[in-house]
Amino acid sequence: HPSLREFARLTESATSRKTADAVEPGPASTPSIESTHQQEANEPFASAPLTHAQQRQWILAQLDPENPAYNIPAAVKVSAKLSEDQLKQALFEICNRHDVLHTAFVANEDDRPRAEFRKPQLPNLYHIDLTETRNEEKETRLNSWLANHARQPFDLSHSPLMRVAWAKLDDDQHVVML
Image (tube, rainbow, N blue to C red; front, side, top):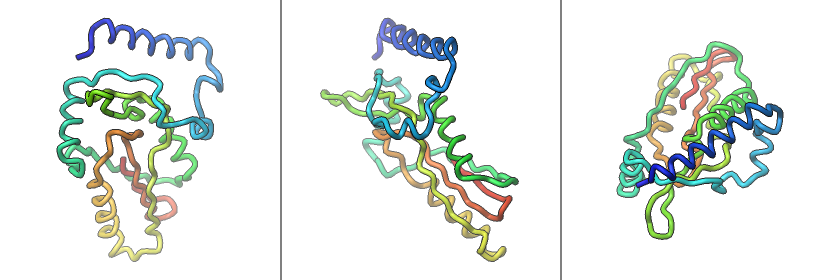
């Protein structure tokens, strides 16, 4: 179990980094997709013991790694033109802002799981273009494709713990599932 002292140290360290970024804003404080890919994305820069809820999740993943029961997919319809570059940049920003999305859960030398905080990276983006599909088949193919992605389990030892499925239905009609 994490000690209060260790938690305070981690919190102070994270707060100091965020305060420094706020005081000295600029291009260096916000990594870009390109600069992050040049770094070792899976190299941890910090780690911490798992919470009780994270421990339960890790144990369940060890017992049944192919079980997608705890996936929480959410799909949204986008009625606008959507650029792949803009979507990738938005996804990267989401991963950059939320530490949990670039955290991996790994066992250390004594097989005790820890949360490893890694550099933000772009999540896997799966794309299907259904613009040439007949309208009566489009919804069936879309639902089948999204359901297939929603059933894919996550490997908790690799970040980011998010994947994105993007279906293009028409030039200005899309479905994006996280």
